[in-house]
Length: 57
Image (cartoon, rainbow, N blue to C red):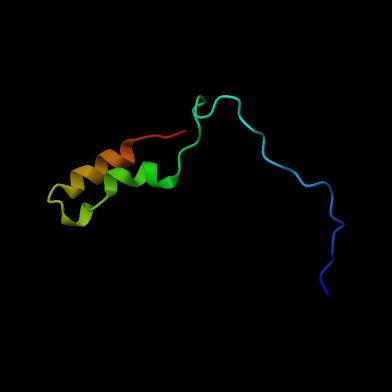
């Protein structure tokens, strides 16, 4: 039988005073956008080389 932990106070996310003013983390689709429809591109080898040269931190 799984353990049941007691419920503590409900934690709500912090409300921002000025939305979208901070450099927020991007979703994975942002980084993969350059690879969209790569199968139909004749220069896909060059596109992949450029994509894997990039360093995102």
